Image 1 (cartoon, rainbow, N blue to C red):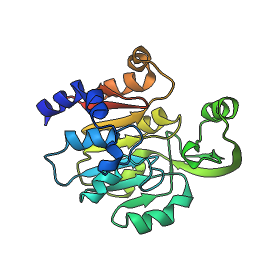
Image 2: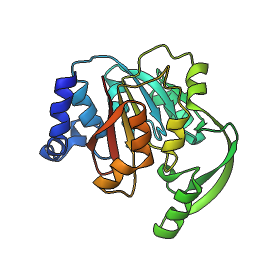
Image 3: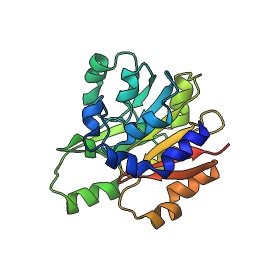
Image 4: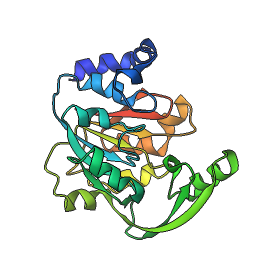
Length: 230
C-alpha cells in the first residue's frame, strides 16, 4: 500500500478538485476525507476503523462510506442523541456514548444549537461564542475515560486501518490517552482547526504524533492525514 499511498498524498487536493460533486459518488465527509481514504485503501475490501467524535452516523462522516462497503469499527461520541440513529443506520458498528481524554474525571460538555460543534474544550467554547452565530444551549456533566482504557474494555483485537479524530479542540488529549503499544492505526485523520501549513508542523498534535512514529502527509482544509512510518 505504501507506494500507492504516496501517489495519493502527492495529488490529494488535485484528486478532490477533479471530482466537483464527489458527494454524489457516494461519499459523505466534509472535505473529501473518505474519498481520499477510499483511494488509499481501494485494494482492501474489508477493514477496521476507529471514529472518535463520530457525530451523526452518516452526515459528514469519515467512516460511513466504509461501513457501506462492509468494513466495521467503533464509533465514539459524547452526544447521546446519536445513539438511536446508530442502532438504525449502523447496527453492525459499536457505538459508545463516551468522552475521551487523558484524565478519568467528570467534565463539562458544552452543547450548541449546531450539534457538530459540541465540545468539552473551554477554549473552543469561547471561540464559538465570540466568533460564530451559534448559541450555547446547554451544559452537561459527562464522565471521561482514556481511549486506551475504552479499547481495552472493548477487547479490540483487530488491527486498526484508520482512525478519524474530530472532537472540537480536544484532539491532543484523546491522542495522549491512547495505549500506543497496543493500538497504532496505519493512518490517522485528525481535525486541526485555525492553522496554516507551517503551524501544522509545529503544532503539539504533529509533534506528539511524530514521537509515535507518524508523519503528516495530506493536508486538507480541516483535516491532516498522518501515516505510520514503517
